[in-house]
Image (cartoon, rainbow, N blue to C red; front, side):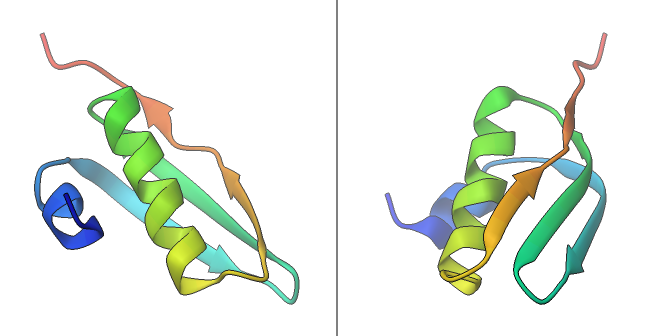
Length: 62
């Protein structure tokens, strides 16, 4: 499955992407661990030379 299809299948709320000189920091809430992982993959593909720090909180809707 390509990255676009994976991104379409996950939910990330309140996403904030802070891009610095050498790093990218992701914050917000993902509905699953898979969503958090997909967000990291997307950031890596967009910023391959940056360090990715994924601070997304995984939450489950009850």
